[in-house]
Length: 133
Image 1 (cartoon, one colour):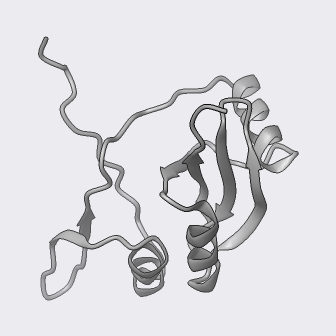
Image 2 (cartoon, helix red, strand yellow):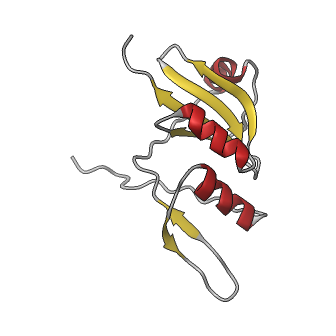
């Protein structure tokens, strides 16, 4: 079956380009797959592995926020990034300017999730699947 969408791209406009690039490259360990630079503009493309789009109603978003942060905190868009070691990823992210919204918690679906706010104000869930008990 041919899928109707072949790739999801999220375009993030950064007020402080250098700070945001440093956060994604240094804190999250991303390497740019492409650089789109002209004399007057700058942009980078990062490949983030498999992409999915989750669409929540307000009640489901509130449930996830309650599990991860104990209160409704995220806005309309929140990144959720799977990492191999959530504790190490949180430590790097905070060192590079993220704010820890909530320390890691184990969810009912057996992921270990931590909530951050990136230097540009975007809510990010870092998650590490724990596997079967």
